[in-house]
Length: 106
Image 1 (spheres, rainbow, N blue to C red):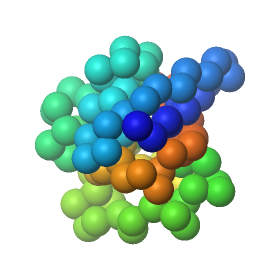
Image 2 (cartoon, rainbow, N blue to C red):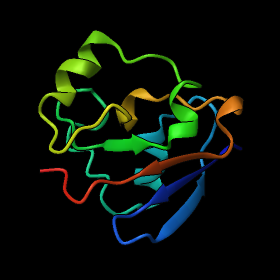
Image 3 (cartoon, helix red, strand yellow):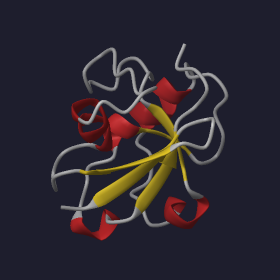
């Protein structure tokens, strides 16, 4: 299974294995990654699974959908590398993905 590393605002790292086909958010929730609230359960309706994708990975991921872009407008502290982890479906090519968790999802 691909491994994804979540970096907390204090620099703490947590690497989890996420099954191909799951979203990064699902893997985070099932692995109890702090800071991934996922209030809507992955329906792309709340922006509480916001993450910052490591710069080396930004171009390797599929582009943001219009819906994801719209929902990111509701997230605090967005940046060009901001993504909703519920919209990132894990593929075998994503092994080693690194994302940063924001200070707050609200």
